[in-house]
Image (cartoon, rainbow, N blue to C red):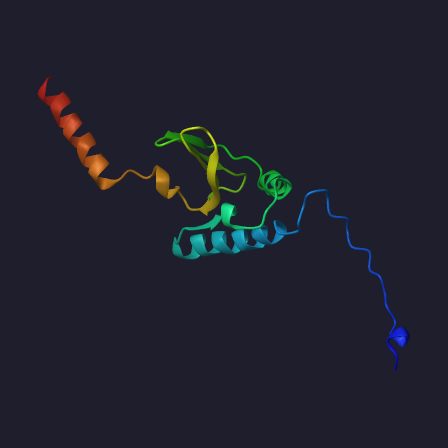
Length: 138
């Protein structure tokens, strides 16, 4: 049988919007699995968006699908970091900037509270010592 005899059927796939690669939709499935694991085990996880072949259009699409949540945190340490809860509680869009404001990394963290926001025990100790000092002056 020749190749010309093999029937070819064209299936009309939904059009891909300009600039989209198709790499973002599978991330939603991965996030669903990570949220499921967080609920079952308490295990936090993250997806490093900077390490994936995503275009700005992919990132915009993903951000729009995840929506905006109620909590936004801004940290100032060697540049600004923003942690924005998405419309899915427990799913956080985290962006780190350098001192000049350029984005150095973006990730989606699946956690009850992002690790970066949790107080370090040494910082809590400093806070305790400060409170003791304030109390000693009363």
